[in-house]
Amino acid sequence: MENSKNSSLSKLVPVMLCFFAMGFVDLVGIASNYVKADLGLSDSQANIFPSLVFFWFLIFSVPTGMLMSRIGQKKTVLLSLIVTFASLLLPVFGDSYMLMLISFSLLGIGNALMQTSLNPLLSNIVRGDRLASSLTFGQFVKAIASFLAPYIAMWGATQAIPTFDLGWRVLFPIYMVVAIIAILLLNITQIEEEKEEGEPSTFGQCLALLGKPFILLCFIGIMCHVGIDVGTNTTAPKILMERLGMGLDDAAFATSLYFIFRTAGCFLGSFILRKMSAKSFFGISVVMMLVAMAGLFAFHEKTMIYACIALIGFGNSNVFSVIFSQALLYLPAKKNEVSGLMIMGLFGGTVFPLAMGVASDAMGQSGAVAVMTVGVLYLLFYTFRIRK
Image (cartoon, rainbow, N blue to C red; front, side, top):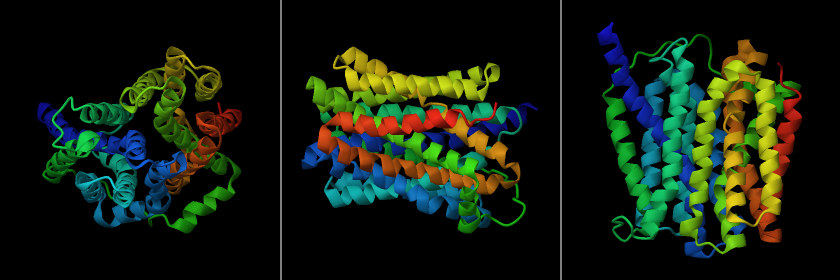
């Protein structure tokens, strides 16, 4: 029994390191702000970076499921780490517009592969009642990488750590080393994978489910959740810079604050959802975000802006899991197709930043907040469609 536990733990460590690597995708928020400053870009030009990262979920989510059926989950995760490694290597050589476009594209492709394959891989190590808590812990580990990224970039920009003339870009080689360790550890870890029954999903099977009204509602809900997530990640520092005249290095804390409260929300949500219905908790979460959006329109004080960012982080923390589970419960016999489709919904991280960039160029950061508010209002509408 003891040997079995030790064996599971030895397999769990490299997988959790992969969850940490999954969080690298969130560096795009703070990185796009630094690239904007370095290259003198407009908001709409800079917001192409986060949009590009999440565009690849539209293209790669379903093919990744098909690839897993052929080569296995572990090899698919290893492939995702290799692509992520390549994306982190490129910025070491500079931050020209084209170089960063290629880097963020690879980061998005690697993350699309990883998001689709890592959770199923974990289910081979941890089963039954312990799977949900392990997935929650994985999200916590992922969030550590998310909120560390702005700090590392800020320390690099202010020369608080050795940067080897990279400045804020020292973030990339630091995370690249972690990716290398994750590749080496996972490669030597033996994980026995369960064989999947039936044929893998196709694009046609996946997209056909959008003809079902509730599945379409869930898909758009996922798009709004990710749009708000990426939008806040990118826009929070810009609001502080625009309204309070803060420098980017100081304003970068806003991104970390968002991820800290999103992480706290994930943990508390796992306990609250045991006592409260998904519909009630989802409604409270959405109202919190709506209040925060109203606050971002009205407030110009640092403390109040920080409070609004924290509310969005907490409110948005469990939206994905509730919508995802609702979609699976609606069509339990089509779990593979529904899962692939919901992961495709992460494409919302492309749509929202593009719209926010155009809106903020036209009317300042309030325009970006207005675009996110549309997403929150949709989630409020979705609340009334949730089954109790």
